[in-house]
Image: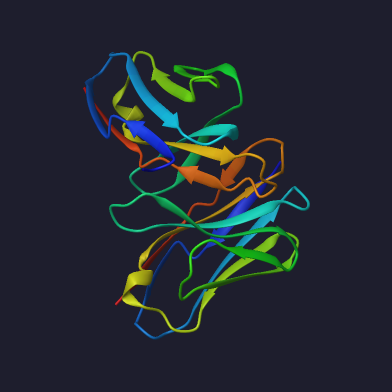
Length: 111
Length: 112
């Protein structure tokens, strides 16, 4: 069983819909990242969370440490949001801060 | 501001040839440095990480090696490439306990 599980694996939405991607982890963590990978392959870090909630534009990320669960929400989705979204955990205690990745959620937003 | 440079962007190499991918970071000192690989249709996998000059940790036994000759330079190498080395290679850095991760733009390697 992977230490970081994401769901769904694939998600298709219509423009304007509210999107939720879920991530569960089975290890103790010091932080959790949400990453966005576009078709060309480049990866951008969207959020780094250790508790609570963060918001950036139409993106919201939450984490519940007790339940070992995080969610990424996209409000008013747009075709340009189409990408693979990856959840990645930083195990604790670990000076290396190496990431353990989920397998990603491929999001397609249709106009 | 911190930036990360990774090159080349694409590379096609014959089986058995050597490999050298380079990554440099600007605007920070003593970063953690990482090499990740994404094989076709698969998730990201950590290959090597380094918490300081000359300190290299390997996560997956393989045909590749890494070196950190300077604080902000991380090199991924192979003496003889295999077909299975094809994939998308990403360099990344983090400042321990700080501002999170920054990824390079990646190198798409095709071994033919």
